[in-house]
Amino acid sequence: MSRYRAYPTREQEATLLRHCSDARYVWNLAVEQHAWWKPGRKSGPGYLEQSRQLTAARADSPWLAAGSQTVQQQALRDFNRAMRNFFKGTHRRPAWRKKGQDEGFRVVAVKPGDVRRLNRRWAQVKVPKVGWVRFRLSRPDVPAAKSYRVTFRNGLWHVAFAVIPEPVPGTGDVIGIDRGVVITAALSDGRTLNCPQLTVKERARIRKHQRRAARAPRGSQEKAAEYAKVARMKAREADRRKDRAEKTSTELARCYDVIRFEKLNIRNMTASAKGTVERPGKNVAQKAGLDRAILAQGWGALRRRTEDKAPGRVQDVPAQYTSLRCSACGWIDKNSRKSQAGFVCSSCGFTCNADVNAAVNVAAGHAGGTTPRTRPNVREPQLVTSLTGLVSSGIFALQGREDVKRRFSRRPGSLVPPPRPGA
View (cartoon, helix red, strand yellow):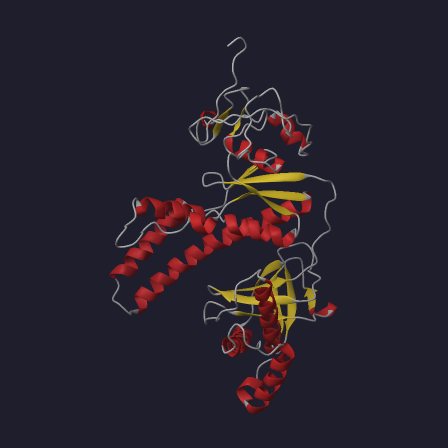
């Protein structure tokens, strides 16, 4: 998807809001209609039947007929596709759409002349019953798409074009990504990426507006205005996070054939620690702060958008022992992790950034787990042993392996070192 900021006029904005309302109304009617069909009974009507019902409803309701039939029918098509994804088990069941939160509609069958450039900075798109709507041309080329979606959120209009993704690179390159809080994403080629956050001054402004809203009378316009300013500031942070995820996922999909992520259950990691009345939780405030820090990194958005742009080429590697395993010799020891950023292998002395070392293990496709290494001189499939060669090559050549004997100590997560000669 190529997303652009749109700038409609006041007259056009009123019609666009009408399209959003019609699409949301038709969607919610379809959700309510399918809610009458319980599991085990006959399934609800499909798109063709619902389309005939929409035609009859437009004939009986002049206010519905005043809207765009293209927008309303496309809402039914989107709902039908959402139901198919639900029955496949890949998505959740379609839910209700709310005013002010789910504002948008989709237009298909875009003709070649419906999107055109005005000058170096501006272009325009033709919207049914609206006319030509300008949008900021933030990319060098005008998008050649067959469909687009118009959305409205936090007072801003955007138009997103569905473009054909670029072909697979075909170079055989593999990249591993380790996700963290201090470093958002560490790549196995030595790069580290951080998700943009609000500045110190911006956070101070948020606290200022929150204090003003708390002092304002309940239900007053002053309170609503202050909360609206806070919402705009937080929306700015969300836009920055989304922009970073889009650009990073696009680069990964274009440059690498296989993209391996550290497998993390973000939903469980950010679950509340309050507990119950009978069994209250501990360190609830500290856990809430950690949850906010995790959610501010955009881990899920990066993984999801990469999968959308590189379908079938994204893999998940278990996170167990990725940060404790030496990427050079395979030795697993918790004492090798000297600090959050420092990793010094207690066996071979290999030194590297801890997050980059974990990303190299993720790129290799193994995490250690129940088959840890005990002899550093006998190596499993490994990558280059120096960070300089890692950055310069970027290609992970797997070498041969030999079977070795493995022994665990009584304490989980640590290994018994190999016996010294003559012992």
